[in-house]
Image 1 (cartoon, rainbow, N blue to C red):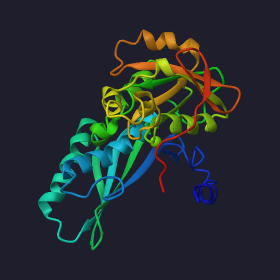
Image 2: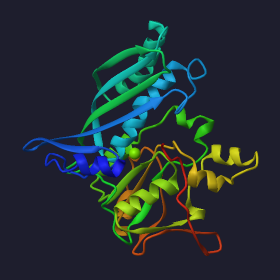
Image 3: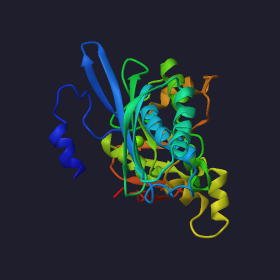
Length: 302
Ligand SMILES: [Mg+2]
């Protein structure tokens, strides 16, 4: 169905990228373009219905997931539209709390809440946020620009978001801005929303490459270690497959890494975890230097 949508609507000349990246890049007029993304969150699917989930958190997350997509495109957010389908009986105080969460993030990044739509019905809470941004630099980052030999790097640490991080996505907009400002030639980027291995597979496929990841170099979040203590998947498996990290996965030519290392203003650590390869397919190199096929696993929507 997604392929059909991309074909049906993707040929408009104002679209500067094929449909299917983290966000759309749209020509407005000669010399003017904007970047658009949208994401819908549904109670019972993406979060427990309130009051189990606090209204502020729901609002903050709904905007945060969109800002993570703009960060992955190296786009600066400008405006947001917020649309709500509210269960009948929702109080105005609860809706205000939801907007408090939206505004807490919007204010940090100087965004305007430009409008939206509100409906009341008999179903559970559904909210949709759409965001408008502008390219931070001359162009945007896409999933498809990676070349064989480019290094893979991730921001922050991965895994275990279920223990709290998933509620407060920290969109890596400042990091993207610092890289653009320094002229680091990022060749491809995606935000890790559905799991490192799955989002890496998407980036590699869009770039026409494969990828190899060194297990020992993956930055593992303390929350992933904590989850692994209860048995089940290892901390590494959590880092590879847990969704909702909202970190950035970028690729860059190895020669550009020196530029990153000299950056003093990078707000979060960037770690090289592997490289893109000529041959398609994903590989994981273990501590002994042996390679195993890496199955793209994570959160599949629908
Ligand atoms: Mg994304």
